[in-house]
Image 1 (tube, rainbow, N blue to C red):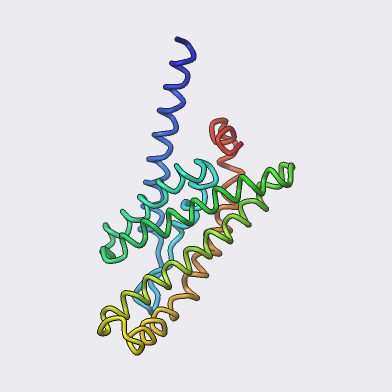
Image 2 (cartoon, rainbow, N blue to C red):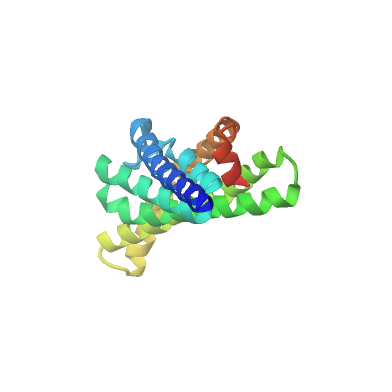
Length: 195
């Protein structure tokens, strides 16, 4: 009976923490943002996308990151991006969380956390850049008359302009994650969840 109560308490903590990470991702995405010439914006929400995957694990982290980022798009008036954001940010957190765990085990040192976050973050953010590029190219091609060769070429050209801004956002997310992780790792439950 005691063990069941302990499991219920742990599951409740994880559920609340997952919701908290979704909320932090949403707020960080919406509050601190810098508009870009491509009608998008650079934000610090990717820090929490990566930390969701690292701390909560690939599956739960993907859920928190995807939902939090999607809500930010919905609340900020980028509704057309919400479905893509759900998928792209969930995949970003999933990759970061999975690679964090694999890399951390391979190095076996306390400092390996930073390398693991950087490696997981790099792959995760690469997925983000490619995912948004493909989505924007498809939407632009569709809006430009369908999926003809000319419309696809125009869509690819138009969406390529957003790549540098997404790279800046991704690098910022990785750096902020590396800075915040030691602070969050002082929390016993966070340390336990990270392995």
